[in-house]
Length: 143
Image (cartoon, rainbow, N blue to C red):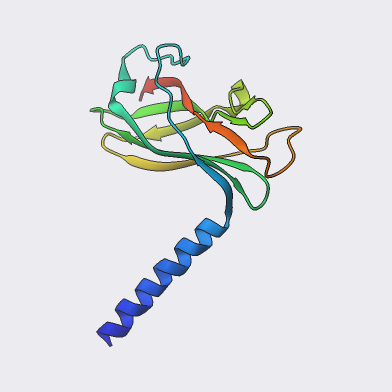
């Protein structure tokens, strides 16, 4: 019985992974931009305590661009992170950098969250190749 449960669990994991991969098209790796001119408003210097990993962009099967990042709050307090899900379309322009695109997420001290931003680039044919994926901070606040 125990062997059956282990096999069933492994099969479920494989099916879930295959299903998740099948829902994305044109996935590209990204980098979370942390340059001195990335537009971050961070009066308390909290961005040094926010780690960003697992950055990527892809088209979902329903024709939206998904910008993904995993963030971890290593500070001693709750923070609110506002970030732009910026990406570019190959042979096109930059998207996800406008004021209305900003995402806001609160994190308790020590919390890690996997974040997805669903974008609808105007005037872009669905599933057009993505050129790059470079989200960045907009503002980080204490509390």
